[in-house]
Amino acid sequence: MASWPARIRWLTGLSVAAVVAVNAAGIWGIAMARRGVEDQSSRVFRLEVSARARAIESVMAATRADLAFLAGSPAFFTLETALESSDPREARWRRLGAEGAVLLFLRGHPEIRHLAVRSSRQARLVQAGRRGGVPVLWKSSEEAPPVEGGVIAQLPFQSEPGAAGAPGSMSRLEAQIDPADLMMRGRSAGDVSRLCELTDAEGRPLAAETPPRGAAGAAPVAPAGGPAAEAGAAEHAVASIRAEGWSAPAPWKLTCSQSRGTLAGLLEPMAQRYRMTLAVNLAVMLLTLLLGFFAIQQVSRRERLEARAREESRVREVERQLFHSERLSTVGRLAAGMAHEINNPLEGMSNYLSLARASLSRGEPAAAERQMARVAEGLDRAASVVRQALQHSDPARAPLSPLDLNDTLMQSVEFVRARREFAAIRFQLDLSQPAPMVRGSQVLLGQLFLNLILNACEAQPDGGEVRIDTRPQDGAVVLEIADRGPGIPPEALARIFEPFFSTKESTGLGLSVCHAIVRQHEGEIQVENRPGGGALFRLRFPPAP
Image (tube, rainbow, N blue to C red; front, side):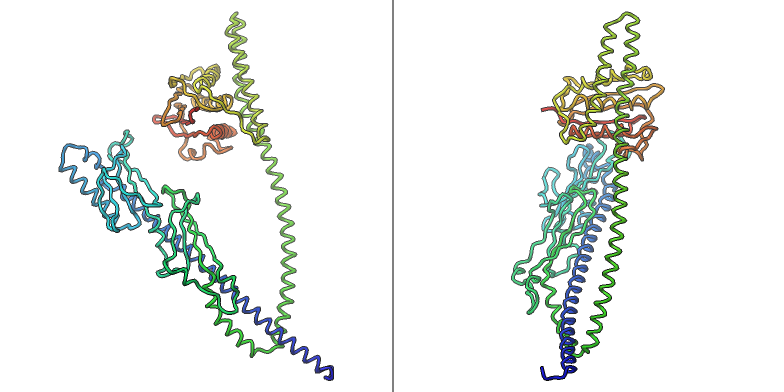
């Protein structure tokens, strides 16, 4: 080759380079095609899992709707009354109608494994289940066998049409669905290459598919020349399922996996066709295309990098502005909250100082001393607000200790009674005896009770009634504060504890602070409109050990 003319050597080298480039381009094309097929298969796999999740979701939504329709069936309206009546024919006729409706529903909904009608006293009036896949009735005194991983939906209904609001008039329809049956919805027959698992929002498994016997030995094998690591690799897809109204927390998740090895057999014929095509292509043309593609790719890459750099610079500037705005907003919230919380004890202190001055002018030092003690309590309450604001910089929680709930509540009531603008308010107290003990902070609970009582009084500027009672109930201590004001608009009930949300001209922070204090004491707070007008706040605290 050294004796060849320079021109021949140059052409030979160019030809060899062209052949190498053509083969490199062919291998690159095969690799890109393989990746494209795998990406397309992954997209199809995710779409199939999503479609399967939508099928399960559709079945659950339809079942829930049919259960609601069944709960409104006239067959259940007077069932409880008829079964308790002395007329056996009426009771038998009503029971037969209810049992027929339950069995007919089970026949049309194979995913339901157990269906029961419970009375307002939670007694089983009618219940049915499945034996061998066939709907059968169960005795009311017999407990149906539980379904492993089953989830329950309860739909209350009015057992007596004319007794709305009567105690004990609400019965319920209780259905148990089998998640394993739901898993079969949308699955292709004979498909053993993928396995799925259904879990709830907390990650607890509800149902899972197991590989059929012998499926492990039939696992796909990587083709000759293919990457062995990909043959055993697994691909996963997750789809969310809306499942509101069932005992398992929503949303549920459907997680499926399949082996990548099943794609290898599809790629080998395509690789053969590529190799045959490469032999008849012109080397120079492919080399030119490859060089042109490379140049275009570099230009495009440079443009993308420049655009990305400009975008990142703009995003960093926006983030800096947002962080600055967030800091200002946080300072404003803290200042507004402290001003709101300190204003209440300051008003009470002003009233007690006025009363103490009047007592001293009348020559009643004992009364003045009691009122000055209340002023000291107001100072302690304001100081506690400042201390709690400083606790935001310390992750340690405020210390909690056993205390008398009635005593803390009475201090707040006396604090409000001393205000002249609430002289027309009548306080009705019904406190449990012996006094319930809870574990908490007296300062924080006093702040909580003071806010709620002040809200109840301010809702009745022309005078009215504030009812306060405490009682033990279901292993907890319950406190209720009710007024006879205008109540709370129904559209505001769901947002009443949100920060800066108010139904009156205020900062909207009082009830948000109350909610935070209750949660800090591991309690619950609820609000509802009182029958006859007014609002009722119900608080539940765990008792002190």
